[in-house]
Length: 98
Length: 275
Image (cartoon, rainbow over all chains, first blue to last red; front, top):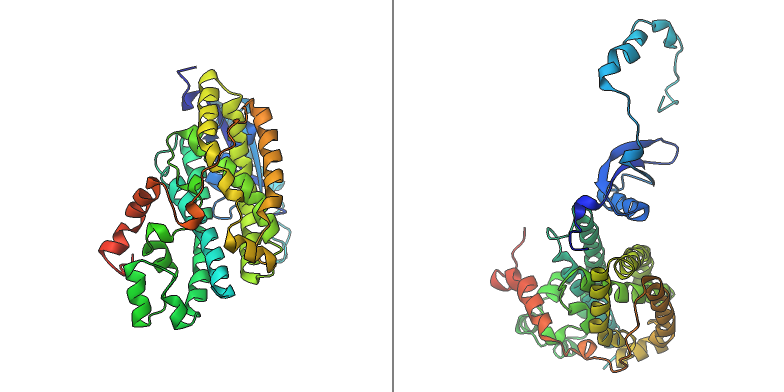
């Protein structure tokens, strides 16, 4: 196979958990030949400065996204429903990451 | 030769291995086949250079504590001889940048050129597999400094071995071209693998003192690992039994001279420069 090049490696989305107890957050994307390589590449590209304790990768083609063109109908209706926000609770300082 | 001199020699063998492979791998920086692998290799190079630094710092401390008379006969390079004569102490940089080729104790495998991705992967795999078992043993060393370096290195090396093993399989079990290249690289580098297991005088004395690793015990473990990975990769183990050696005694291939010329140029041309 003489025409092998990086374009043939699929794109992967990388999610990093920065420390135990927190959620995995989208960190970026990269190319890799398979899942193992994707995790290793993610380790090298995104966790070199101790940014993470856990990595998820998923091939980008498996991510289904909402249509930006439908943003108005999807999200605007929530705009004026302030009663959905529990703003009347006092949150103790000790509770973090809420 | 005093026992202290053997510990210094042993420390330098390990440090030189780390510096030379670290430098070789760092040559890929900016030239990797894809961005992600470029970063992966650069990370690995920094692991090796970090280990080299710890070991050179330790070696410099040992050297500075030697009796003045003994210091004279250890390094042949003029720059270091001058420092010894002037009664100056040396540091990690002096050991990396001011020693000449024949003072270096790295095994020949590690100074072999990158040539292509397959050579680079094969060289790393042979060394990573060795390192994995070597540092597992050195962790138990009676020498606390070496034991500490080994413990830290083992984590890094475990990852290096994972990376290089996967690439050996990926290339060996990949396309016709990739298989041809990795098998060729393995064939060419095979004769350099034996030196990792040769016990020279320093290795023997350090083992007797409970400081150094038993390379004879590591060899079958290494061979087992290599065979397992090569089986997955459909790579044949070369028949050749004759092995190159000399690096651990300071007899190097011409490649080391070119590495040092590039590595040491700045400190040689502008002594003591910093940035």
